[in-house]
Amino acid sequence: MNIEDKIPRKTDSNESFEDYYIRWPQCLSQFPKCVIRQWAYDHNSVFLEKWSEYDLTNWQFSLVNFSKDDLSKIDHFSNERKEYIEKGIYWLENNGQSELEDIDVVTYMIKHGTFPCPIIVGINGGHLIHPKSRPGEMMVEPYQILEGHTRWATALAFLEKQPSGLLEKHEIWLVDLKLSRH
Image (cartoon, one colour):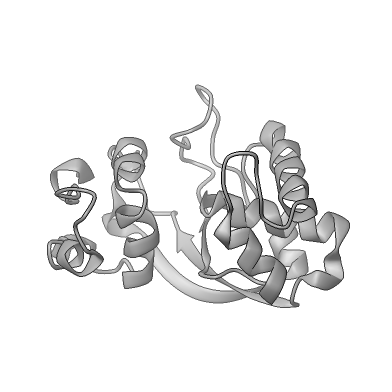
């Protein structure tokens, strides 16, 4: 199933989430409402561009608690992890400020020690090519970050530089990809 034919594009930048959500396809009803908001709605064009060739109808979501140790096992691509840590450290050292903007999620994490909303992490996806990977590069296991890269980078920076600033447990949307096809 090509999701581009099923998942609605935002009508315009002013479309409310509730109006968008009404148009969400029944065949993807297993997507939690907050996942739809943070991934398909907030990042609508990127979501459609990057994930349009995947069969998302088999994706199963579970809201789970991850420890600090579990967070450290989430990865992207091995050659990019260091870059994400460096970005996260920069944001922490600058209290959520970057040269271009305030990064509200970092400011939230500095204040609360956890994510403002759960990141989305894939499991059992080693048979899939990630849409942002190099040719032939498969998703990493055990855990592949799918959405929430800024929050994840900030958590990695906390683990590296200020572990006491991070709470012991964090809610994560874990997506089982074992039945997914590309």
